[in-house]
Length: 89
Image (cartoon, rainbow, N blue to C red; front, side, top):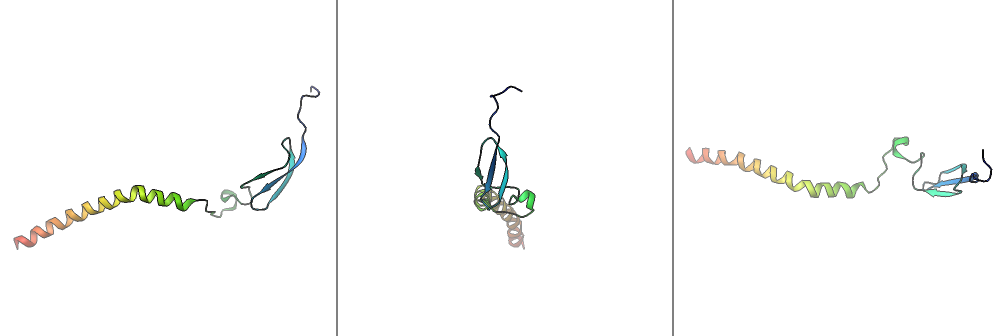
């Protein structure tokens, strides 16, 4: 290996927002992260809400009206034959 071309590989601490501290070695040094393996839902099996309510509401606003319109169309079609049957009788 060539000398003086490799970065320094130093001890570092990675701190998660949940409070978990991971001690390792890195060329970067100490740094903080938002989510780690101790709090990530994939590894823990627990659901963690990260702005999912806003996404659901946005989906319902976007596609909810179409579902309501489709429901109203079906109701009108179902009520129309019944009204005609009452008039004939």
